[in-house]
Image 1 (spheres, rainbow, N blue to C red):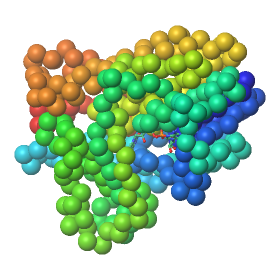
Image 2: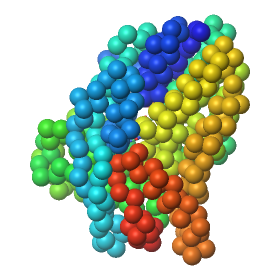
Image 3: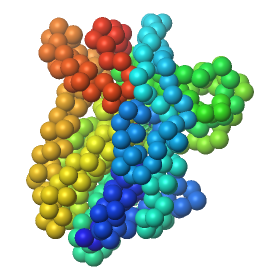
Length: 343
Ligand SMILES: Cc1cc2nc3c(=O)[nH]c(=O)nc-3n(C[C@H](O)[C@H](O)[C@H](O)COP(=O)(O)OP(=O)(O)OC[C@H]3O[C@@H](n4cnc5c(N)ncnc54)[C@H](O)[C@@H]3O)c2cc1C
């Protein structure tokens, strides 16, 4: 099959490699210039799952790990602090991971795909892996994104663990994700654009030097709210169709899980892709993300009541507990409850 992929992020690179390995004729179109291409993200995810995807792509995930966390510190409103035990949460060199996967794949950089001029008919399938931009699919009326930006910093002293500040009403959060050699990502996503924690971070870490500033909103709406997933021969994969965990906007693993669903359906019958089956499998896989999203929006609107919404909270907890290894941190009902009440 002749396949075009728009976007060389985590979904585009993984699919580019996997589809080419199956003997397809693959071209990736990436909007940024090769020398400026950057993996916009804080590079944090669970190694328990990433080692499986890395293995599928012929990589050894251990080679990419920059920091393996032991505890995540969470500062909450009213001077409360909580610690989560980490069981696999790492930061890894996401840019190198994607570049290494793409070593033998044809990538055309500096090519911005858009639906009015892309040569769709030259390809059997066109995969929209443009993440937040969703450049080749119609916009969704239920899309929900929060403004965010982050810095890549170096020369950080005495701060070598994952650190998060949760904002009142779950309207956003600050993060510090350590990398290696005193580097890290410091950033925040905030509906109210106040980004509490960033200024304070630089005040408390006067030695910190900024290497890069990266601004890009974070999508929080799950697949159920991001239809359509396809149009003619265009198929959306990854964050473009809402494969993000709504509480945090964490999308590396959800996007890769979506790639696996795409490959499963594609392998069934490459010449006649079953669009409907793909849609149903994505909706099924990420069904509980919609419960998480509902909880988040209720909290943001100050309408979450732990008694009235107990069933919904319990459902979220049970699913997350089942998926604990995929998150890479402990899923504990008591702590989750405290968190929900504190925010
Ligand atoms: C500040 C920030 C921090 C984050 N931190 C984390 C984290 O620590 N852990 C986590 O799991 N998730 C995190 N996320 C979310 C995660 O990065 C994304 O959900 C994930 O990368 C989505 O993968 P993707 O391949 O679908 O899209 P992306 O990785 O976003 O890739 C999309 C690619 O498409 C390209 N592109 C865009 N438009 C076009 C176009 N028109 N034509 C051609 N190419 C185009 C882009 O340049 C990019 O290379 C973060 C997001 C942000 C914004």
